[in-house]
Length: 197
Image (cartoon, rainbow, N blue to C red; front, top):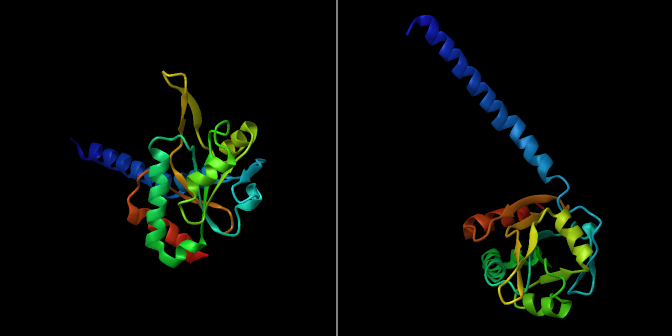
């Protein structure tokens, strides 16, 4: 290979590295920030197990963990609520400053009394439901996937997003916790929000 060819290859490699750096450090973060803008914002009105309404105006004021699920869920929802209890135990007294909101994706079956029973064992947790239209508006606002799946016996289950969404005290979307994410990682994300506020 000639010296000229090597220079051309070096130039191409340098340009590729420059473009990659611009993507990683400038473009991708801006795209991610834009994608997160507005999560939780919408015209939904939900009723909570506390006897209050939950709207986009309810998000500010407290660090909040929002999880969408349903009371007939066989695995993801009870596991996630159990994980949340573990996070609370790790956070200790700080956990009192963390609001936990469980929003049903199955408003046809999940009444407020059922939801109240479902989250009652998790300290400080509240649950919310509404008409199917209002729940759909909330799903759209939080960018949550939920879909009814028929079962062979004529019953149905729900497929749904399994991530917990974290919001800071200003009500701004801050981060997510994946299903069964390492407890150290999950607690660190929550703690960072509690300490920053």
